[in-house]
Image 1 (cartoon, protein in one colour):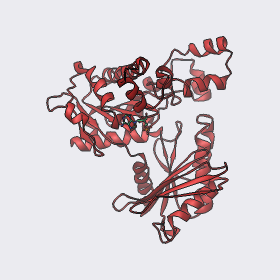
Image 2 (cartoon, rainbow, N blue to C red):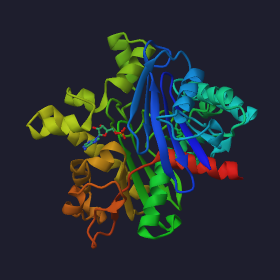
Image 3 (tube, rainbow, N blue to C red):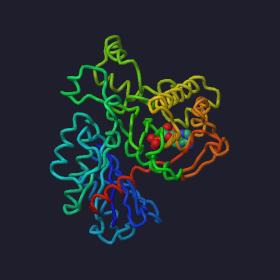
Image 4 (spheres, protein in one colour):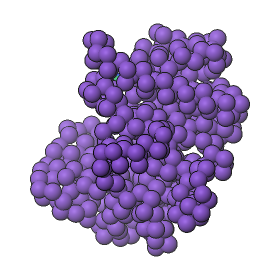
Length: 399
Ligand code: AMP
């Protein structure tokens, strides 16, 4: 069975084609600048040269057509015909309270996703365009939707409610949803397999630290709490996002600086975090480099970033009455030994002992970086959200 995984954004569309017999990636790629002039398709077939084609792609229907043309191309293709694609899996950012797991796309499911446009106005409409485009190009192929929020639907009320008037929850569904669920789910499962223990037996904190960042507390094999909330702005300090701040700052600054709603949103989402404090970059590599060259603001940004990760790990250890596994994943978590060292050094009282040599090594495989004596197992687990989407799609379509 071959599964095409699609992540549709408003002006981009990423794809990966899996052969589910061995879960190998046959090809991957992306379409960029949809609806603008000079759209770009970058196609990477396994074992063949990458191809880049610049042309005009005005909408998602054409984008999906170009993807299938590439996949079946005489020279660059990996399929004899489009009929070889058995199912399509989509990443959907927001599943609200309705979707607690992945589901087959039906007209009711599409209606529910539309109802959730309000909660994810930048993402869900774009995902919907992806679903419609696949329907147009491959009308008989089953589609499955996999939600970033679904894994966190197991959070108890104490974790997901905000202490604000409950009418706001009833009327507008204002509550904490959490994001990166596909990644937290994938790495927690992988970590348990790596340790050869049932996931249900572990008290785990997973740290998905990339451009966006979130921690999750995994108890009894389920998400018990997570640092992102109603939107992906809450929680850890991120590349350009503030994470937790006093909410009273928002009206105060709007008043003092005469900001519009959009400007206030943009300040917190695009001009805060590591970028604001370092004054250099939102990219961890550049901030670390500047710090190592003696830049004081870069060091402050790095220290604040680390401090906030430590605080969440400590909070979740308290929330679960203990922790026995700590997992790092995503761009920073997988690649920055400096970040992992700084986080672990500051919480040795929990029983963490980092093996510095193992921490400094690089690998694409899941691995342990704590010493045999460490009470808490510290792991680095490369995330693979696309593979989890492909697996869910395969399972659902197989029935
Ligand atoms: P992601 O959003 O998961 O793709 O992660 C992107 C982030 O990972 C950026 O801040 C990158 O600077 C960071 N990153 C990638 N490689 C490294 C590395 N070798 N060292 C430190 N940070 C890295």
